[in-house]
Length: 180
Image (cartoon, rainbow, N blue to C red; front, side, top):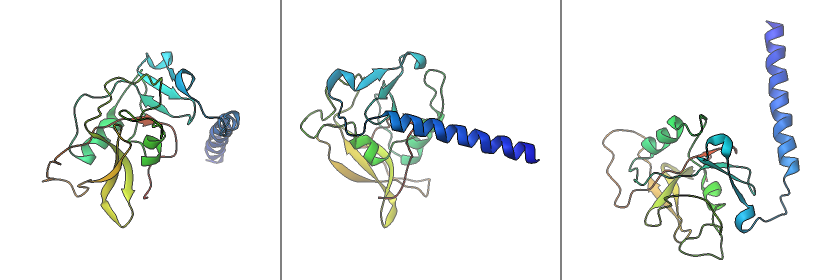
């Protein structure tokens, strides 16, 4: 039993050290602009993109369809396999916003991005619940970087279809969701 526990502790320490080494190798004071910020990942069969500024890995080709229910959008990411990799999730609102450029408009995505099928007519789901009412989550429009809240219908079943349903955009890495 102790040998098993020791192996787990060693594995956790190795993962933590690897993450810390990556974070230390990133220059958080450096802003990446244009082509140098994003890298299409061959090890993901070109289906994913590394954002060198945040260290997150994003789905490259987005669904052309909206997903009206938060639970279905979240499940889509959880079930997603890209480049033979799992472990995808909905991004936080901050992670979505990190893809935008405050000086850009329609789209607000950073110049030189390699993403395909970015929908400017709909917002994107985030995993970030609003403070005070977990029935709502934040969404982000890539057309104008406007953050709005959407009914998440977390109770399940019988959820009304939103007038302008959001789209799912999946990510790997980072810390994940929290209330904001």
